[in-house]
Length: 170
Image: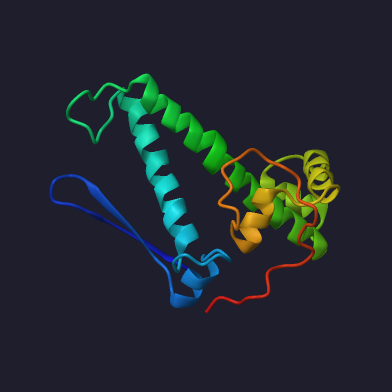
């Protein structure tokens, strides 16, 4: 599994670092393979946006800009696009892929409910929603990468994954 570390800097800041093994980096390389670990780099950019957005929301300032530090409409437009077009669909795809695989391996609705921190009936409803239709683009992205460099809303795929990916991480 990847390694995550942080260190406190002398100026009061914090440095975050994620480290991937070669096998992990290959697993996060989309099928079109522009560069090893490209999905990880893209997700790192989204994580950077999450942190910047939290700073903007909590301080009312754009922390990396000394000139015009008050967030403008364009800043919020970028946040909205990154959240609703890039980040949230991918997070939903991760969850959907995990639910489909867990259920396919026989995980009970009660255990899924416990994992989701919801009632059994809510988990059962969510499982039915996921397993009762083909995989979404972002569920497929979670399993195989994003061959179309998708930046769009959910659209159902013709075929969905039926089993876990066929690679193993070191």
